[in-house]
Image 1 (tube, helix red, strand yellow):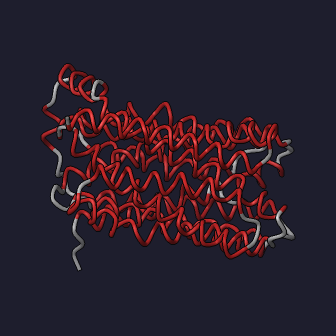
Image 2 (tube, helix red, strand yellow):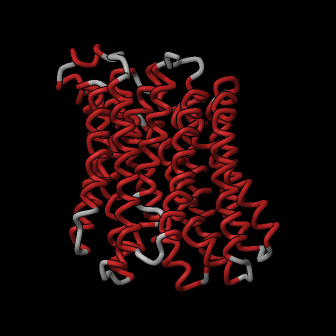
Length: 390
């Protein structure tokens, strides 16, 4: 059976993000501790790849506009397929940090370039198709911790061996994704004819588009809230009397909701418009993240987790498609790169700033603060959209 280019891209995304995720969840903090790292060093190592995403996503998008999407995807998958084997050679924490920095280029390049390619391939169904691609990557993201945790648990008597096996599987998934890339047709030859001057001019046009930047800001805001959710909900829930098993259900329910509703939410935005969906989804998200502070029992927290996953789906399925709509084809990689960089900033600083609030005012206030941040950014988006309409 011959697969379509889009289906090949989705399967490639599944294996690529599985490879990326299994390298860090749950193995990374355990491996860092095994190497003798303290809590602060574990935190540094965990943030290195996110930092790579912040600095590399925009250049990756620009280069994909100039050199073509397929070439940049191939480069990212070279990193996906080589970085995992470097972990096996590591014997100190600073080597681990360097490998994480190198490995971070894989996702930083792959995600915005792949999203730009999906946007290039589709127009009327753009939101739905981008939703399906995101769902494929989320399946990989969901499967990876289960696989990694199972291996570590089965070989608990020999942790050194378990880490090596996890990273071998990580590398195998990266190699499979690389092989799949060879089967992608050369569908973006027109980008090769673009001159550097034209490429940078296109990038400047994207950077000067305030609606694109404001839309990216909303995604950063919802990921700020998500970073707060995934970091502090487990601590808050355990302190409230929930078991680790119940916390796992809440976290998994949020991811499953996000994965299975993104195509439908993308299709909804194709038919009914992106802007209202972004606005209402962000408002629901602000309400949900703030509401965690009001409840301490399992079922309310589970319900809010599911609703928060839905709000993430509503927002993110529309923001990426809306930014693709606002950008020209020759600048779409740059636009997706800006989105990737801004969302990484939001995802990274969410736990940091919320952590400061939690230290001084309590975890409940950290949830409320995250809601206020998202609500503020949503208001700016509403004002910007209203001004343009008028």
